[in-house]
Image (tube, rainbow, N blue to C red; front, side, top):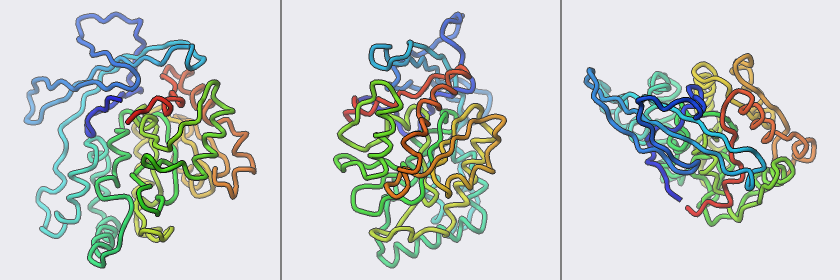
Length: 328
């Protein structure tokens, strides 16, 4: 499977127009659902260049999804990545280098004011002390913000909130519920697949639990706590990550339209107050954990409801069955 570079912009559905409109004089780069447009840098009067991406996204054929084929054409202009380290003390530069180097440009710009707040500086000091104490932390540093690179802000269409990263070896990689190959899907993800099998016609349960192809379609999957000490669940809970997640949700609510929020469990549902329900769809259910899934999760039909809402608002539905063909 072809992957687009980590920090390149993805599709911005809020600005999408149907492909039956005339191409006019614009140049548009076409790609399949799981192929990614190559950005083209154009001249700009400002010091920073502007990256313009045109993407023609086509859903798989009706024979594989049970839905009709539709197309969207989108043009996304993204400014240069901001330098959040400029003018900082050496201490703060060291603390915030990870954000500068590994967070997607659109999210870095949207969240940069959070990084200078006392809670976030204290969080980064805590993580630095964990490193000094030789505590093993998951996910690896370079993967903490992988959610931002897989799903840049302009591409967000569906949000799934998790709680705590998986705390065993070779599992967590920055997307909630997802695990690296060849790790087998954990129990909560197995229950998600069970729901999908009943909810989405033709869905096939994959032999892995790596959810990258969802993320690259605009499904933002992020945990309330973005790090955890190895083999110690909830060990980084209450250290500050939750406040950053709140900022992520507020940003999506304010800057995007017609996003579907899947809030599973009380922890996620408590964040529903941050979402403008006049602009977005909020779906709630119990958590897919084996401890609660039997109390209504398997009947919630959230994946089909999400796609129905997206289609009703002129957006391409998520190809939930894309995991089977993922050879990454």
